[in-house]
Length: 298
Image (cartoon, rainbow, N blue to C red; front, side, top):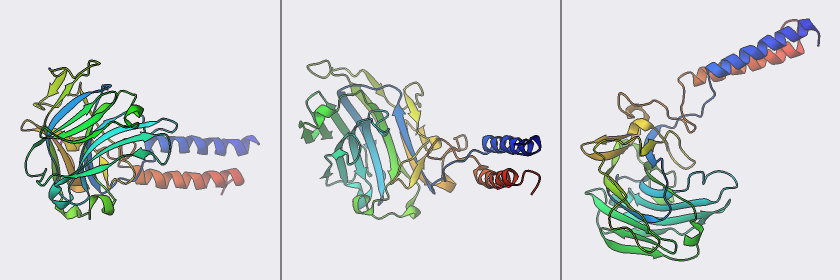
């Protein structure tokens, strides 16, 4: 390539790199905003006791779950245990589930449980007891389900604690969606963790969080989403108020507090110049092709 041909090509590439740096290409933000928090630490076995109040409404899921960080990555076995309260039907139904396996389809063992009362009208206590050989789910102290099959033995890794509220795209599972009822809120009064000592659960909790404040040493806030979720998770929709953790599900126009982050894309933020960045990058891509094909001018 002659110098007269190379210089426009080099300048074009440098300009394109500058545009991409200034205007990163980000995922399209979703029209609804949810919330998720997660522990920085992880534990292997234990008893998890929490008092929560679910959000009501078709399509809405208020969840607590144990999660092996990185389960979503290729070639990594999935390890997850769920408590998911359905907002449909007056929030009287919840689902227990274990999800394991490598690749698709994953192994699941979901069961739905009808309480006969609404988890959205008052606080109720959920307990999850995890030992090397079993998982037990309780509501207000009463055993609802125990699993001790081979799938339990697939839970071999330490797991984070996560809470979230989100909107499912599956009408068959979560019910018909009506965004007009937003905002709605999931509330967590407190959570305790009791360690497993190899023979039994300790009688004194290893830690307890009453959510007098948001403990950033213990918890992080999500800024991502996933397929099948109508909402992005944003940090501003997870906060502490009146001694409770609040996880909000809102329209985009009502999301967050005045001090919250505006990040809302699936990969950690949707810059305000994303659309402009796409246009400019497209223009420079077109220009580069022209300069490469016609280096002496368009």
